[in-house]
Image (cartoon, rainbow over all chains, first blue to last red; front, side):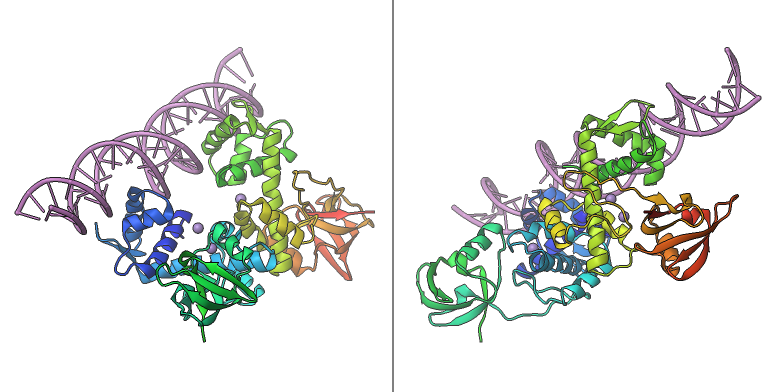
Length: 218
Length: 218
DNA sequence: AATAAATATTAGTAGTATCTAAAATAATGT
DNA sequence: ACATTATTTTAGATACTACTAATATTTATT
Ligand SMILES: [Mn+2]
Ligand SMILES: [Mn+2]
Ligand SMILES: [Mn+2]
Ligand SMILES: [Mn+2]
């Protein structure tokens, strides 16, 4: 059984592996977890002994198959609980992450299995992130960043990249939600800002915003 | 904010205070928490400094008003989650306690408030125990032990005293549940064993069983 | 009241998870 | 190539929780 701290490290490394190729750095983990590099070294060495990750001094770490499975399971629990909080308890989507951070560490396979069934086996969490299956497998989904679309292209919002509260409330205010139809009306060359149409409304967004919205195009 | 360990101590002492009058002994806490008396002394001294309980060396402890409130809130969360697990996720009543032991420590008032509402503000958990309100107040309920009834008295099962899995499964097998109508057909003088009627069935139970079933009589 | 037994506390140790400060290694710029 | 900077690791300290063994206190027994 893995401790809360161990689970959080595995989860963080799992997420970082998708961005950095070939070994996650100590610093990257420290930044993401808001802790000190020395603490990361300690934990990473402990986890290496438990064989959930590979570690070579000064060279960064990679999860083993076991490590990935444990991490994916924590993420599965996190996202299922988020669905529960939004769909069943009617939380706004910007308030659920913190609570799911706690719920994801509750240990009971039976609980997650029943929760999954009760929620009717959802494939995505409220922010559009895929929910791993019980074996840790994640469906690959072809989604594009809004910032990569060109003028006159259109798509449906399927997720967000960052999901901090301020950003999600920004989207709420502008009626951008999962499922919204978005069309690029114009795109500035030099700063990547855009004029877009969301439903009937037209609005202007910066590249930073466009970099954090995922669309499915057809 | 109180740690998981602290919350468990407060909860345990809260429960023990109802039985032992005038100070809960270190040993009693140790037995109930399956730990060593020396560990209890350590923790109790720490909690005394935080002023959630009163402690005099060799004299046992008593919760302060603050301590009682914290404990009651943990119990409130525990029991609400048990209702959720049984009523919503259809867990059998003998499997929910362990999971609720973990869920009770999730910190979010908003979560509990919404869960309470979603469950339609239940007054009792699946074992018949009262759910404290958000101020920590518990409705006093007049319930009697089955073992205190005499021949020909009758009542409705409203709860159980012990709720370990074996006992609850024993009750399941004999179709004794919350809401069951029970009548005492006969009672042995020397060992307190009874012949009872549950619905249409007659069955024989030992005093130990009768000591753990609560009835409401009218 | 003296002795024995039960109960409770203290002292010292250990495991977990963090931190700061110092030292080691790697990467970068001239 | 060498100096500077950034990154990473180690050493040593702290907080938390629980343990064992030794000591102190209370309670029960004769
Ligand atoms: Mn989240
Ligand atoms: Mn977490
Ligand atoms: Mn319970
Ligand atoms: Mn607990």
